[in-house]
Amino acid sequence: MRSALACLLLAAGCGTTSVVAMPDATAPEDTPADSMPQGPPDVAPDAPARDATAADAPEATPSDGPSDALAGPEAGACAGRRGAAGDAVRTLMMGAVARTVRVHAGTAYSPTRPAMLVLNFHGLTSNAGQQELYSAMNALADTRGFVVAYPEGLGGSWNAGQCCGESARGGVDDVAFARAVIDQLSLEYCIDPRRVYSTGMSNGGFLSHRLACELSDRIAAIAPVAGVLGVPTCAPRRPVPVFHFHGTLDGLVPYNGGGLLNFNSVADTMRGWAQRNGCGPMPAEFLRRGIVRCDRWSGCRLGSEVQLCTVDGGGHTWPGAFPIPLFGVTAREVSASELMLDFFQRHPMP
Image (tube, rainbow, N blue to C red):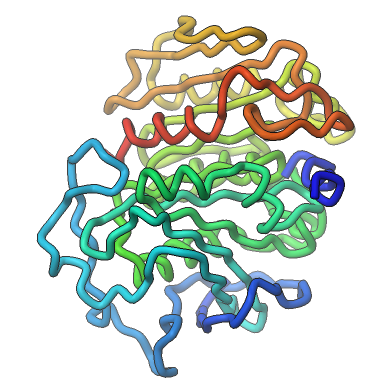
C-alpha cells in the first residue's frame, strides 16, 4: 500500500451543480472543466431526481459548545438529513463535469447534533482515497464524531493559483467546487455551518490557503501541510485562523521559497497571515517535541490565531503519518491530524 501511496507527495498539492449517489468508490475519468458560474447542488443524494430548494433541508443551527460533535439544538433541528455514520461516495456535476467526493461520518456522528466538517484535499498526482489513508483522519472522526470529506481533483490536481498541474493550467474553479461540496454535504449531514474547515497535503495545502482567502464566508479555519500561499492577492472577509505544518528540508515546496515555480517561503506565507489577522509581530514557541517546534502569533483580531509547526530536517511529508523515505523525514513526535483538529475545535466561525 505504501508504494502505491508514494505518488501522494509528488508535488506541492462552476456552476449549476447536481449530485447523485455512486454505488462504489470508483471515480469517473477526469474531464477537462470550463469556467462556470457557481451555485448550490440541484439534487440531494439518495433522493428522487427533482429540483432542490432551500426549504428542502433546514439549516443546522450553530452552537457554542466546545465538542466536535456539538450538543447544539434540539433533535428536530436537522430533520431531513439522511446522511448516516460510515463511508459514502458522492458525485457532484459541475456543469457537464463529474466531480467526486469520498465522505466519512464518524461512528460517533449523530444526525441530531450539528457536527464539524473537515475538507481534506490530496496532493498533486494523488487522489482522495490515498489522502484518506495517508492523513489517517477517519479514526479521529470516529472518536470525535465529525464528518470528513476527501474531494477528488481533476487530473490529480487543484487550481490553487500558482500551483498546480492540469487544474491550474485550465483555470478550474476549485473554489466553486469546494463551496458546492459544503452545500451538498450540509443538505445530507447535520453540519454546523460555523465549523467547516480545510486541510490538505501539498497541492491540497496550497488550495486550503486559497480557500481561506476566497471562501472565508464558509471556511472557519485552515491547517495546510507542505503547501504555501499561491495566489497573488489574498483578501479574506474576516480574520481566518491558520495552522501550517512544514519541513525545513522539503525538496518540492522549499521551506525558504523558490524551487521550479518560485514558491513563496513559509516565513512570507505566515507573516502575511499574521498581518491580515492583526496579530502581534513576533510569534512565541508553544510546543517543542524532538525535531518539531511550534510557534504562535497571538493578539489576533476576533480571537483568531496563526500557528506554524516546523519540522527540523523534515521532508515533504505529513507529521505523524507513515514514512515515505523518498520524500524525506516524517516527524513521529506529533500528529498533524490530531493537532489541527484541536485547533479547529478552538476556532468556530466568529
